[in-house]
Amino acid sequence: MAARRALKAVLVDLNGTLHIEDAAVPGAQEALKRLRGTSVIIRFVTNTTKESKQDLLDRLKKLEFDISEDEIFTSLTAARNLVDQKQVRPMLLVDDRALPDFKGIQTSDPNAVVIGLAPEHFHYQILNQAFRLLLDGAPLIAIHKARYYKRKDGLALGPGPFVTALEYATDTKATVVGKPEKTFFLEALRGTGCEPEEAVMIGDDCRDDVGGAQNVGMLGILVKTGKYRAADEEKINPPPYLTCESFPHAVDHILQHLLSSSV
Image 1 (cartoon, rainbow, N blue to C red):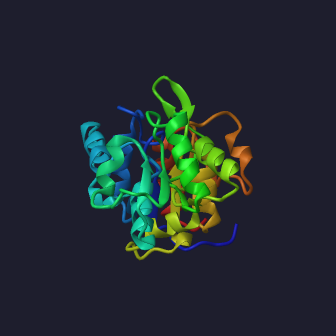
Image 2 (cartoon, rainbow, N blue to C red):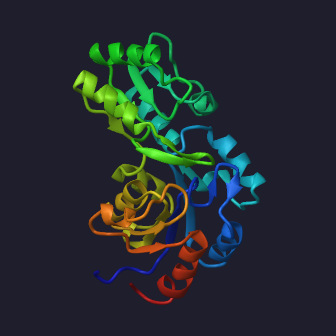
């Protein structure tokens, strides 16, 4: 790998990396404190669409993570920004807990479809309504296209299969705003003063976290918590810069190898 600039920023995934629903990954809070003891800028980047940014922050604070709202960049934020830019009236296929992040958006007489993770709404009647809007020319905005995610009771379908079903049925392509899209990672870095070559991403999703970050020039560290499954690291090319057991191990590596010398 070519010589890189000194590390200035660390992007950290949330669910599956720092916590799994209401349980913290063992040692993650302490590891975050150690990372904060360095000069790096930290941003928390998540495709979570099940809850608003405020709900997410409340959950993290209950788990005793020292995180502030302005450090979190979510795919819901990116989707809201795109809806504002396009000035459309979306049919919001999102979990009810995510609706606060779309406050003020006009949704009557919809002329667009925004789809996230919405298990309660993923049934034939609602999906068919979205299908008909798309047939009439409405754009399809996917908050992300993850295949699956980790819950306490095991792996669960993500929004990706439902987005793909609507694309297939209508012969259209969704605009995807979350990870692994390049614009998502660049937006997350905006305001930090850091270039992708000065950043590393830590996550449990080989394609969306690690592959997406490496595609914009960051280093990617894959952790074996959350949705990780054996041999995930072989699913992308180039492979992850590092695959390790958990977030604390990733922090150990950063402190020992990425802050003292170039990669």
